[in-house]
Image (tube, rainbow, N blue to C red; front, side, top):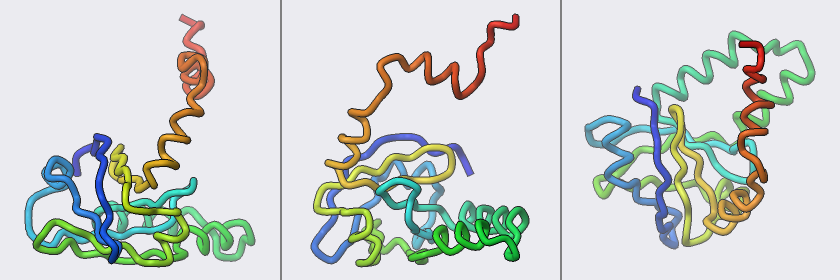
Amino acid sequence: MNQLKGEYECKMDAKGRVRLPTGLIKQIGSGENLIFTVNRGFENNLMLYPKDVWEAKTKEINQRLNNYNKKHRAFIRYFYRGASELVMDAADRVLLPKGLIEHAGLSKEVILFAYQEQIEIWSKDQYLAELSNEPDDFSDLADEVFGGGDDI
């Protein structure tokens, strides 16, 4: 799987279907009926994973988390809550589950934000609000996240 990238404005129809942009489909791979899993994101959004990525994520969770640990069980429940398999139809659409649509507050206008091997699905308004919280100095955040580089 290639590293996904891009920010796509899309429309969701009244049934909860979102057409995946051609540029994004090309990055994921060719073939009809691509299979995805969608679940709750860490923020007020949804996460869409191509099938092979979802399988790797679940393998990682199974290997790293201990079902006998209360915090681990809580994480497992939240991570899998609402997880649903989606099959892209002939019109390049996926049908999002109603409960997940409500959870993320999705309406007609959505943003697909692709990075690494996953795709975040946001309501357009919520995504723009999230972007308005950008730090005043991105370099300070980069320094905090990646560590100083002053040691050279």
